[in-house]
Length: 156
Image (cartoon, rainbow, N blue to C red; front, side, top):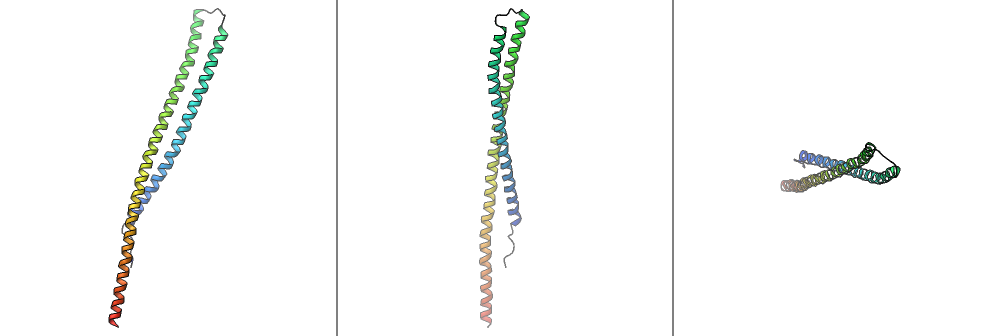
């Protein structure tokens, strides 16, 4: 005479929340991977650019050595070197933003994992309650069967 668990709908909702939290954790883990890859690519690009810039600066200085240059030509040369330095600053900012994105993704992952832990605890609590309820229902069913048997014995 075991009827359905009265909190079944609540148990189902908690399981759905746990599943959703698990999906959010997976998405957050993927985002951390993407952000880490983007950071690595930005750092590699900056490293390659720094090496290229050093080589390019040396090449440019070598190309003007022992040449007579007007003041305007010298200013243009300096401006071209400054443009190289400016581009390096742009790449450094790109790395800084990529690092910040990765930190944010890791924070989001930690928050998602905390939500999953809470959702799992919530499911665990309702499962424990359900087990206790099933045990009590089983005992009650046994008690009723024994009462019926006693009634049958007394009647015979």
